[in-house]
Amino acid sequence: MKTQITIFKAGNPDLNARPMIQLTNIDKIYRTKTIETIALNKVNLEIERGEFVAVMGPSGCGKSTLLNIIGLLDSPTSGELSIGGQQLNSFNNKKLAAFRNFKLGFIFQSFHLINDLSVVDNVELPLLYREGVSGSERRKRALEALEKVGLRARTKHYPSQLSGGQRQRVAIARAIVGKPEIILADEPTGNLDSQMGEEVMNIMLNLNKTEGTTIVMVTHDEHMASKTKRIIRFFDGQQIN
Image (cartoon, rainbow, N blue to C red; front, top):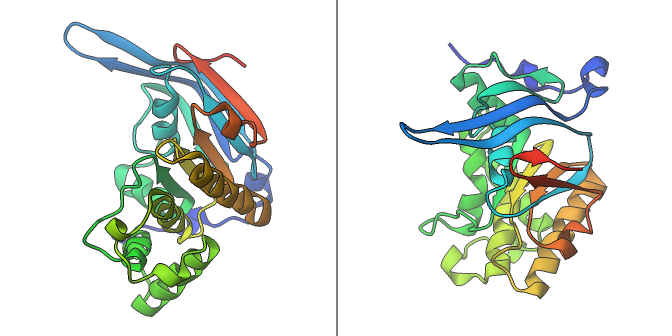
């Protein structure tokens, strides 16, 4: 049976009136035979459509766990997660994967590009998992995404031929090629020098401003965080502001 994708389409006024991301009493506990680690403790958080928020806090405070739960890469131990007005606790793995592919884009500190693929082939990757998208349409969208990040002339290059800032821009193009409503960025400027970091940050700010993309960015950089619309701070698995 093919996964139905009509649930992902925007336009329902009731759904659009709700926060883009809503976490209600979210707990995440990691257990071994001898140790119980509380990564998130009763987190209640709302992020509105079109917000650009920074998530900050010391190492081990739960920032990446929060991002993984919002990104549907991990599941909470308890509590409820809603994205785009849709409550996701009842979704099975196949439905979650399809939802993730249509709704979310990811940017990582370490780029996560495939070295054996050209720039344009790396950007096309998320569209390979979408039914009904032809090869020519994938290429068209990938070129459009590369144009937005200023790398249209580098399509045939490979990641090893690019600077760190250029590789991160390729990663952003890959994140936006599917036109997601939400981008989740985990330390996107952490491996870059200050100039490259500013360039990458400006691309994300422009996406947020011109296309209304909701962006959640985990960062340790107060300067970068100050450019966002709101800073959410965590300590010991709890939101403190």
